Image: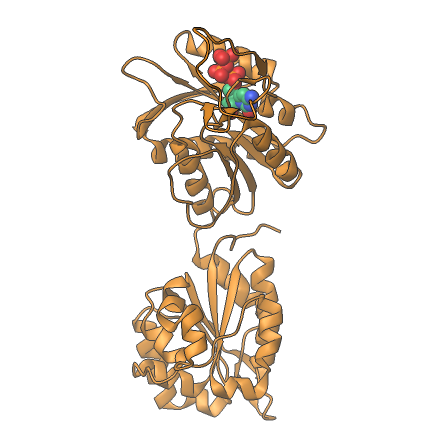
Length: 401
Ligand code: CTP
């Protein structure tokens, strides 16, 4: 199943109606599509279904009180309103529709709806005469006018024994409509593992060998991949960058730690992108105590670090593996040699040194190679370059399937 709601945050508003029991299944359907789900309930809704049911299914505490100091200390109503990408009211009772239409804010549910600029949708459910009443018709029309998507209601047997329009749509149908509200991400549901930044190889307790890698390219890729619908794990050496939204970050220091972290996670990934500037050699032995300047000259014995990317690409069930190559000259030639030598699915090469240097700047340009093809990404921000590289990766993944 394509997880079209990966990284999307759905705030499900459950209001008072017998159809509330179906919303428990709706939570499961939304989660199956990859959504993160939180539930808010009106007091009337809690008379139909226990908040505990929704807590267990969503994996998150249920929100129901506006002025509960404990709840407000956790995730208050304004934070909840900001958190949501989609507010989905299901079932939407006649009363809750009326209260939303009039901009009420005297309970948690209405206050959150009023305070949010998220995408909003409702699945009405009520007795057929309540639905047909001009008061309800006007309220629904007003909300639709203000941008609410109105799904259903369906027709059929009603809990009250009557037959007609007023049944809440089936959870599967509502979840599918929720997914359609969002543009399906380029990498929807794909799992990406990305290394970024430099590594540090200890000489003694206070000194290390390292390089100037800023981590910007890897972090830009992580952010853009998450926006394109991927689940992203970012394994980063020491850098001064904030963690992109919706990205799981693991901090490491040395190449050995980076390798361990990668091998711990690589089985759960579809795509591995190695942007890290892994230090190629480490001191054969890190001194236990600070090295003193007793001698005129000092020799260090260095040993090769493991090549993380080559190791991943050589796995029996290797993910789609993408390397980066920094070259001062003959970029295409050396990049292709590395593509073959490490058995990669793709390599992105950038020129370093001179005016075009990419190491610490905010811009980059790439020449990208894969077996049987290549493309150029012209100089622009690392975020724009990241988006274009992810498009190439998505294309290659599609061609492979
Ligand atoms: N890489 C890695 N582990 C290492 C070294 C490199 O995963 N120990 C990855 C980098 O993240 C990058 C690619 O391999 O994706 C770079 O390959 P490499 O051959 O190390 O490139 P250079 O350092 O440019 O190599 P050379 O010095 O041989 O030109």
